[in-house]
Each structure stands twice: as C-alpha cells, then as structure tokens.
Amino acid sequence: MTATVFLAGATGAIGGPLMRLLLQRDYRIVAMTRSASRAEALSSERVTPIVADALDRKSTRLNSSHI
Image (tube, rainbow, N blue to C red):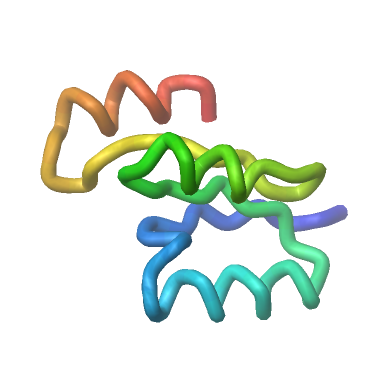
C-alpha cells in the first residue's frame, strides 16, 4: 500500500525538493500551493494539487474538502 502525504508549500524552496524525494520513494502527494498555474504544473498521477493559502482559513477549508 502506498502512503499519501499532505505537503504544504509544494512549489517552494523546501517543498519542491521534498516532493521530488517523496515521489522517488513512491509516495502519493496532496500538494498545496497558492498559485493555480503552479497547481496545474504539479498535477500528475501521484500528485493531487490544491490551491490554498495556509494563512487563509476559508480557502484552505474549501479547497481541501475533497481530501
């Protein structure tokens, strides 16, 4: 069974390399980013992007409700 990891800041300086490492180790990732264009670029078979701002409670609740 493959584990799923929620990764906030998936396109950032730390999140980007961490996501690549997790993908190399066969994890599935729910990746949060603030940009719709970056979310589109993240989308793949093993990455589910979510557009939200961690400092905006409303956007985080609305956009992560399908997890």
